[in-house]
Amino acid sequence: MKKFSVETSLSYPKKGAMGKTGSWRVFKPILDKKKCVKCLRCWIFCPESSIHREKDDSVSIDYEFCKGCGVCANECNVKAIIMEREEAKKN
Amino acid sequence: MMRLKDFPVDECLLQGNAACPGCPATIGLRLVLKALGKKTIMVVPACCTSVIESLYPHTSFDIPVMNIAFEAAAAGASGVEASLRQQGRTDITVVAWAGDGGTYDIGLQALSGALERGTNFIYICYNNQIYSNTGIQRSGATPYAAWTTTTVGGKNELRKEMGDIILAHHIPYAAQTCISYPEDVFSKVTKAKNIKGPKYIEILAPCPPGWRFSMDKTVEMGRMAVDSGAWALWECENDKMIFNGKSKLILEKKIQRKPVEDWIKYQGRFGHLFRPQRDEKRLKAIEEYVDSLWDRYRKCYLGK
Ligand code: SF4
Ligand code: SF4
Image (cartoon, rainbow over all chains, first blue to last red; front, side, top):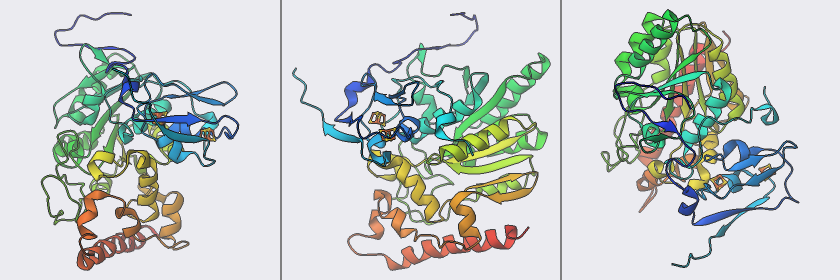
């Protein structure tokens, strides 16, 4: 990446600039691919870009950064996504 | 109108940023940046988005962003635009992206100045009706009777009509939209991108912690706002006003707007109007205000 010299503080783009936000989750979205009609509503509305869209417009969920907000489940008109409580993490 | 299938796949806002779960600002940013593409420079004043950028020395934005003081978004964007003009770079879109606090209140004079000077840029206000970044204080955009940490019994004043203030500048393009309508946001931002001169777009952004509703309902809250007529989708190109989607049907009285109560009853910030008993007086005042808003819209814009 091209670095610039400027007399001010500069930040550079990084995926996970706030860490692995997937650890924030209390509820986890679970996708049932058989029910999905590829409408892409979950993809467009996910605040975290955590719904991946494939070439054939099928979708999958990326749990690394998904914050578990549940917007995808709420917006899916055919209920192909449900929210399940995360299993308690062992310390 | 564009179908979701035709939306670009590229993302300029990276995953793993500091936004709250269910944040409407990030939904708005994704949509706006899909429409604008990578050749965009964003100017961001103090607002939630300066937090969403995350921690130095990293940023979650994959485009150049300049952070600037609360009152200076439009002034900063004017400077960036002037510099690009000097360099002959006409391929880059300059966008000021500010919250309602930085637009309605603190950044108003810089914004008005830039619009009046004819600066070639897009000013986008994502309106969550509060100063949410600093902890949910009232702003000029906070609606009547809403609780905030500085209006504990509910706000006594009506919200400012920012649309009217903008329209008084007679700029080439102004619009109001909402994060719940991706096609509407996309088409308005694309339109603004292709028009020279100052453009203003305001995006309603329902904020789960600020409005006190469950974080999975962000998009639904936006839809309800439009259904109830508390928020209108419109665009005004060269002083020609058009209402869009449901707002058009409400304007033309083809459908009845839903009661505002059906929208606010899901928001904790209006909880004191329903518990311990219904505050009929203020609930009535809210409906009357929205009725008067539409009466005025009809008087000004219907059949023209
Ligand atoms: S739960 Fe929220 S962050 Fe996770 S995939 Fe669904 S919409 Fe995206
Ligand atoms: S919203 Fe539901 S049906 Fe549409 S793409 Fe997502 S999972 Fe599939």
